[in-house]
Length: 142
Image 1 (cartoon, rainbow, N blue to C red):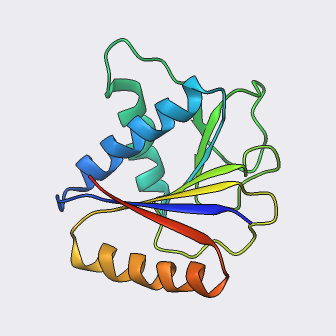
Image 2 (image 1 turned 120 degrees about the vertical axis):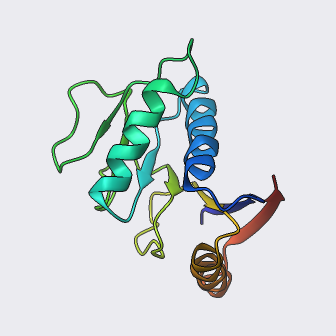
């Protein structure tokens, strides 16, 4: 059963939410864990893709938008709107508003919630769903 961590941000900025996601992605990458980042739209996927190139001047995180085709290079962070492919489903960063249905291979789910009311409501709903599924949940105020 995966462990779920909610990171609660005090800002309402999607830019800040994505920046914090970049930090978590970088941390996972440095630990040689390659995550999948769920987004709601292709536009959000592209925005995060762009931000990963520029969020820290000396950082390099191999990443790409997932289009259904596995990447050539295995040690790549994938970003997308569809289900995570095998081998990228161990750590999932959920920036989408959706509850993740297939968690069979997932070890960790990271939810980044800002103070935008719509984001908070969707996060509360997912929190309840994770709770009902019996998952261990931790919350971090950032």
